[in-house]
Image 1: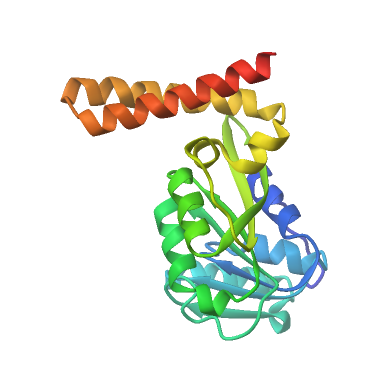
Image 2: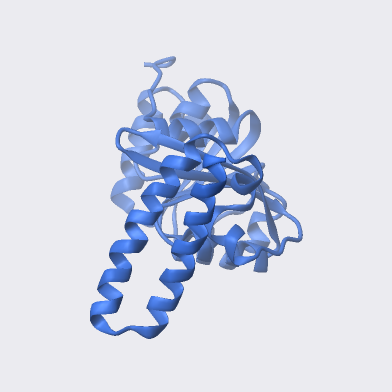
Length: 230
């Protein structure tokens, strides 16, 4: 089956494009292994390290890589985060999880990750991830919004460096704020819907701290919408 290719959905394709061409990549939380299989199969990376805490997921990834005839260029690790990373990598992907989980992987694996570029995509808690990346010694160097069906995702690239972000940058993203891409309008509308629904719940529950936080977030996204309309 050597030479057989896999296709990626829009989210994974955006992640693959941000990885780009490099020597060794690690997919931390590789799940089914399709990202690594695509990058190896198309010659975008020379080797891939596929890691997952789930043995069942790792077995799926291993079977796919073997089926494609790519096993000599891949290594597999059942581990928590980057705990088993034992060689230098050029890029490390951490995607498809919550922001707090991804941040913990970076913090615990900081020494093992070295100077690797981080490609991140999280489903919740993006502001927390950005804040903790800066605290861990990373600066965001790229951010893109990708539409996959009806869903919108933010894919980030971070590199070792100093960064300090205000609340606006933590919520929206420093690179997205600088570039103001057209997709940011739809994403801002989505974030506002989520925050306003959460605010209704917080008001019903009398959660003062949550109310203040959500009101501040809503004000930020409303400002973004106003800027995009100008």
